[in-house]
Length: 327
Image 1 (spheres, rainbow, N blue to C red):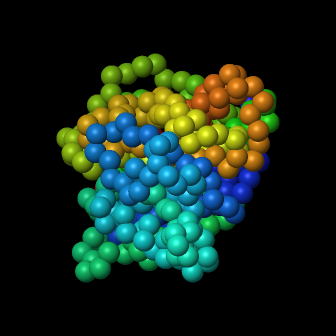
Image 2: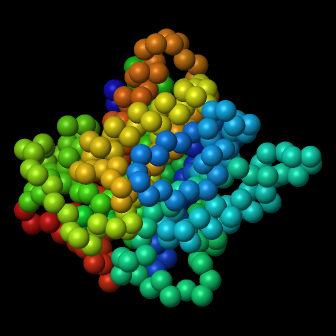
């Protein structure tokens, strides 16, 4: 398998991603949308999630397709980003028709970045405007690192960030991942500059440092609260049902566990959205879904490492960036 031309989730044709962030508050929002509504699902493994409209994504629920997905900082305040996206999509005529009224379907998830050194003394939540701004920026090429929902993200010892990666399978299907990394755990082995995700690295996409021997992880007491959560999207052009897309999202959590130690803790709201554009048929009903699930986990692990690797410093940071390491 090889990466797509961008090594981004937008290698899945038709997808667009936009970022908006505010350096003063050290937070931001990321929006994924597409040229047409897409099948979506979700799977939550963390103990402290923050979400909007995720119940609608269950396989037994009425609405089959959504118009956008939102990842945002800001904890509960960040859920307002989806309102900004919803209003903007309605102006565009996008949404689910209900008796002549157009209702855009925009599930979202948030991470906690309220204690990262940014100025959170707002009198009105900035996330509605950040959501609208991120949607307006949606395109195939976008920045990773300290942008969008990853702007103020942290891990146990380093700044987190926004990451993405892709794979093109032998079947011709494309799989991609997008993630905002704000974990209780760490993406690197303690005392090293080597990523837990190194066995799945392609080329030197996050430094090419190689695999580190296992070291017992440690993390500061300041992260032992609800200040965490890694939120992600995995996407494919394979034609998956809503139930199959749910399985696709579930399998992707393996990638989170490969790249962050520990992950899925009671203090994380770890969550993965899955999506299918349905553009390419499934040829082998047994082998293709297995390959897609493996690719989703692999892409997510790589995207997490790429997020931390690409993070950049800014004034007031409480943690160093990966680029600051002198191991």
